[in-house]
Amino acid sequence: MLSETPKISDAEWEVMQICWLKATPCTANEIVKALEQSTLSR
Image (cartoon, rainbow, N blue to C red; front, side, top):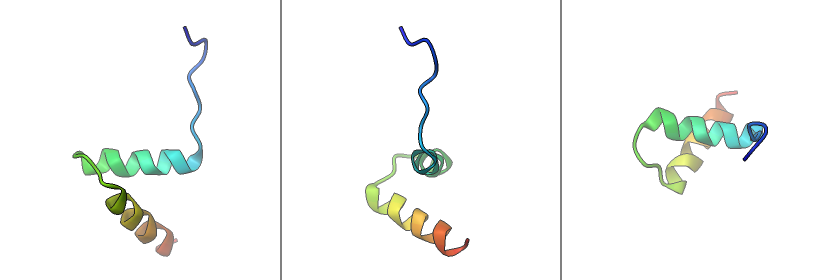
């Protein structure tokens, strides 16, 4: 049994947010495109 919640990196969190917002299964290509768009807008 885990004593504490596992931590994920900021990069892992960003990928998870993309998948959750889409609300349907994501392909790797869709994730890459979304990451490209999010980094270009920064």
